[in-house]
Length: 217
Ligand SMILES: [Zn+2]
Image (cartoon, rainbow, N blue to C red; front, side, top):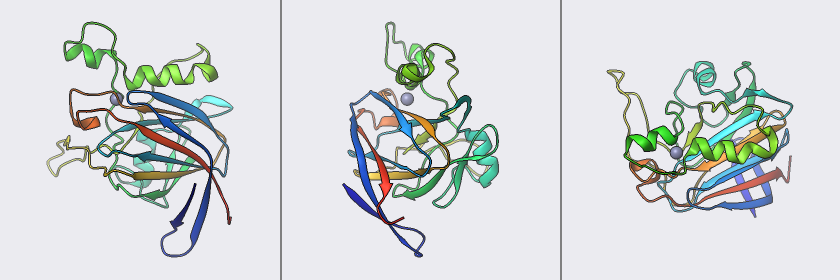
């Protein structure tokens, strides 16, 4: 698969897919993204959140940080051209393209306790457990702190009175985000299994992941 990305009207970027993965509803994925490579995350059905984490491949204590990113870009979420930053205050991923335009850097990942509050008695998949399971091949059991994720395709803007609004998930079928790695990363993604609110449009569906490289620089 190839995709042409318009870089702010200045340049057309041709990207070619190296690997394509479909994450099953409520499922997870992890993989390596080398510096200079691109990752495209697609919501094929619409209204489906994808929780996204990025770690420095050689030092897992450095990771994409929602709070450090918000302060760096002076807004709730970067726009194309801007970069996500780490807890060591350096860029880790640049936002290259975004057909949705609405994402969340405020809400923590859903977890077992969140589902317990809904009255779920037994196990329930969650984005937090998906992250831990997805990263086991990389982390072993050395650390399982769950950083604040980049919640793709989620709608949680802040109102003028500082209230946090949990709106319906805004993504349309086929909406996607493309990011470029500044450093070698390990990425984890959870197709949010939330069916008790609108984070996954009440009916969790698939998320697609393409690792891509530039065909024309
Ligand atoms: Zn979730």
